[in-house]
Length: 305
Ligand code: AMP
Image (cartoon, rainbow, N blue to C red; front, side, top):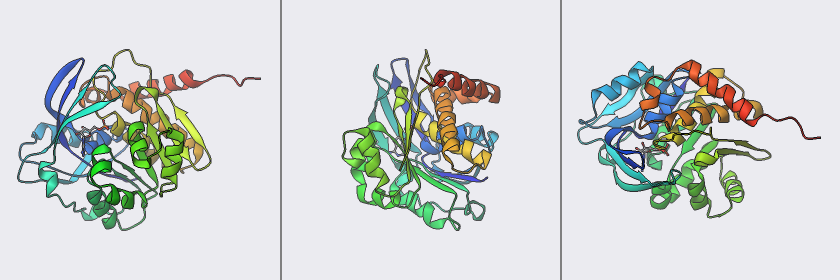
């Protein structure tokens, strides 16, 4: 089934306790499409500037990402710089430069207008809405992501988009900020009352919670000995989650959504093992399948009498 993502395509500068990287490929659409590409084809809508290295475009194209919706505009590429301390769960934004995103008006090629699955990645909510407006047939699933930058700066527009989607991916600090509830369960319930019928709360090394109106599912994060760079973990989770569902053509029943959570956790666990996209460069389908199986033994236990 077809899958479309709109989001940022970025050059990130990162500081973690394990090293520093400058102007490496990043962005919500980049991580999402790379992770989803392990399950099937993805169409990408985004913008880069004149300075975006061609090798990063080639990497996405080689992974089978359809880049007919990637514009190269005059100016500099979107840049984000962030720092993580020893608590890798919390990114501190040092700088955000919108650059070519400031003027960007997404235009969907004709072949992109009927996606079965649509992911509105972390980006200005007005751009998310513009993409949603151009879709000609209601997709099977519309999901979105966002972050503190947009919750603080563009709250009203964000709430409008939220009312139009089926699923929100969000991290725990941001779900509190958006809902104005401290407790994560109450926060998720508040979001469910705002429009989406599902909320996935991403909790870094503590895993993810999927909330539906009458059910909750918890997927752990894979216990890794070495985590180098958490950047992109959330988008890789979403890419694994939606890529899995699109590839199965699965009904969005409870079992499929639970499996999708584990697929998301699996792709996120690979993402954080190296900086930027590096772990995805040589990742094989066999390694993914082995880790999916490892998740099963990680969470399997006999019913308690
Ligand atoms: P995450 O998966 O949440 O770690 O997302 C990390 C990616 O989000 C980074 O590669 C950044 O380039 C991108 N990003 C950071 N801030 C923004 C923003 N305000 N708008 C769009 N993308 C952003």
